[in-house]
Structures are given as C-alpha cells and as structure tokens.
Length: 540
Image (cartoon, rainbow, N blue to C red; front, top):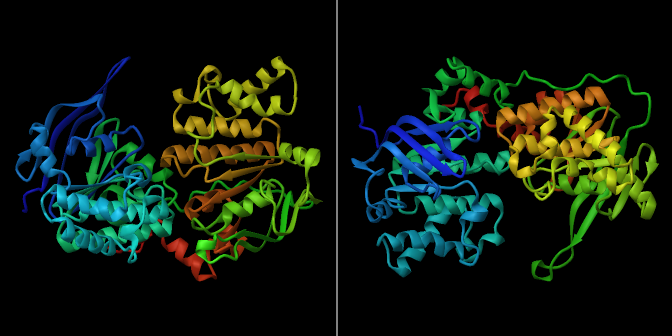
C-alpha cells in the first residue's frame, strides 16, 4: 500500500471563549493518499472546517490544537515552528477557501495574486511568475486577459477559479478545498469541480474536500468521512457510506439531502381552483441601459416572461445567476417597474400602482430573503423584528402585537423564549424561521421566497422546507419560490418555470418538467444536480 500523504491521528482542537472552552474537534483520525480525494462531510458546527484548517494551522486566534498529530510528508505540522510551516503552505499544501469575495485582495489584479505564491516560495522571478500565473489561470478555465482584472470585475464562479489557480500554481502535493462551490449555481459548481478533478488528476494531488453536500461527496470522492459533534462517526467509500450507512446521523443526512432523496415530496395537495390566480404576469419586459464602455444600447434582462400562480400553491422559478429570475420576481411584486407587460394581483392590474395603492399591495405580498444573517436587524429583539410590519401598517396596539409575535413564533416552531433574543444568539435555521414569521405577520396572500434555504445545511434546509409546507397547508398561503436548485424545487413546488437569458424556456407541473424535460437547458440543470453522477455509476 502507498503510505498516506496526510496522516491525522487523534486530533483535538479547543476554542477558548468568555463562557469557557469548547472542544470542537474530538480525536479525529484520517488519511489522504496521493491522488485520492477524501470528502469530509457534516453540518455547520460538526468540526469539519476546523479539522481542515488545523492541518495547515490556520485556526482562529481563540483556537488551539491541544493534542494529536498532523503528519504531512513525514513532518508533524501540529508542532513544527511557524517558519517551517510557512514553507509548507502554498508549496506543499494548497488551500481553496469557501468565500472568494473575502479571500482575494480587492486592490490587486488577480494575476499578481496567483504569481505571488510562486515568488514567495522562490519558484519564479517577477517575469516568469507572471507568465506562469497566466498559464495557471488558463488551466483553471479562465479566458485570456483575466490576469489584469480585479476581483470585482469577475463573476462568483470566475473568482472561485482564481482561488483554484492560487492553490494549484505551485503544484502542491495536497489540496484542501473548504466548501469550494457552496455559493455557486449547480452548473457553475459542476464546471468548477470538473476542472478541479482534471487538474488534480494530472498532477497526482491528494484532495481533502470539505462539504456539507452529500451529493458533491458522492460524485467526487474516493472515500467519505462523516463528522458530527467533533468526531468522525463513519468512513468508507461512497457506495458504503451512502448505500449502506451504519450510523444514525449519516442516515439522517442522507434522508435530508434533496439531491440524494428524490422520493421525498413536501408538495401540499391542492384543492380544485375556484378563483383567478393570486398572481399573473403577462409578457413582462425589463431593459437596462448598457454602459457606454460596453457599447451602449440596452440590455434586455427580462424578455417577454409570462406565468400564473394559483392560490394556495407554490410556483418555482429556477435558473442560473443572470437568468433573470430575481429581476422577474422584483417586477412581479412591484419592487421595480417593468419596461412593458402586465402584473395582475388577484385579478387586479397593479402594473402602474403607486402611492397608497402600492402601499396596500405591500401588505398583501411579503418577502423572505436568501441570507438570514443579513436580512434581520442585529440590534433588535426577535419580538421587535416580527412585529415590524404590524407597526409599519399601524395594526393593533402594543399588547396585541406582542400576542401576535408569540403566536407567530409558535407557528414557526421556535420556543417562546426566542422573542427576547437577538439574531446573533440564533442559528442560521432559527434566523430563517424568524424571517418567515415576520413575513406572515400581516397575513399576506403571497410570500416570495428568494433562495430561502441555499445558505443552510441540508438538515436545517429540510426542516425549513417542512415548515413552509406545513404553513401552506394550515394557512393557504401562496409561495413564489426562487431557486437555482432543481432538487429543492422538486420537493416543494407544484409548478415550475425554467428561465435562461431572461426568457422562459420551459414551464409546467413540476413532476412533468423534471421527469420529462423538453428543453436542453432544463436537462443541463438536472444533469448538474450533485449526486447524479453517482446515481449513473460514473466513478469518482
């Protein structure tokens, strides 16, 4: 047998805080062989990212390795001096962090950031480093000329490719990829992971892939290690771990994963329609002026979009970033004015509504945003957040608002004590439940859900989707559900609209569209769902 490239033995990591120490990693042991991809999976707080960062000792200032060994190429990185460790980072071990927005220097062209790795380790001079940086960016799938651009001039997928180039330009023996595609659309995610597979396979690089997505692990890993509460609870090949899981936690993760559990449906059975749709849009168009530097003219972001949402049902709108789905929904709920077209709310034309008429529309339509961390005011208590819409519309007095807040918090399955807490004291899933409670405060006819679970782990994601289905069954509320993830839409939506380049390319009942897609783009989105390669028997 080939000796392991990375050997982690009985690793323990502790965080120090004002309320005492937190034992985040508890006796973790794992190996990564040359050319092997090992996926470390688990929920937020399971210890997987802490384990990965402990390998290169890039832990938070409050964290420390209390015991254990991290042997890389015969050297124990847990105990070596910092100077020797700097020589390993980037040269022996490359790291692809999760968020390219905060990981790249905003005031330095990306080519220089890639070249910096070569110069720090003495692998190239200034001129040759620039040339090799351009080659690395091209190998990562980026077009010519990108080296001279700044991070803000690139898309999220392109920035992630830059991080891959930074991590691999020195041809490290080991690559640590920490949630490298969690913020990307499924098609861009597949492209990034395909490039990563190709680059690492050509160099024999070992990969430690940190992810909460079991579908990604199923597709890409040779072995999967499942973490829970700081411990590895199960390890094996994808077929062993996902096909015959032994641990109850692993089984719960598989059950919650939308990409792996295709039989799970939360669609609320609907009664026969007896009235007009709650929302209907007809031939919506939205044009934006192009900058003069881009040639002038107009950009048609939404191009003749039409659909209808029946009362008490969920309509999913899916597509990649830039497909026009969010702009379409902003037009539909009158957060932006269309260039042309018609918007009907409960049969009433609200396309040009303004003043008090538009304010009345706001009361009937509420939103739940993607990011539960950014959509709640951190200074306010949960009670104040949930009652904000009631105060804004002058509904009730202080006592009745407080009672309504208690009722709503109970509706979304949060304990009564949550009312006195602030967002910083809640988990991501709890924050999203608060956002849902706030959206329901005015008893709206329609709730717009903009990627409401994409920032959440699969088990929390499943809990929020179950909550939305229960509320729809109890309250009869209609949902407009925006997502790039067809696996999630398959579980929650009665009907689906697929958008590409500002146009509707396919629409109809979800079961029909996803089982028998007619448009090539719909088939592409379905083929990019993580886990489909494993289902088809494609080897990692």
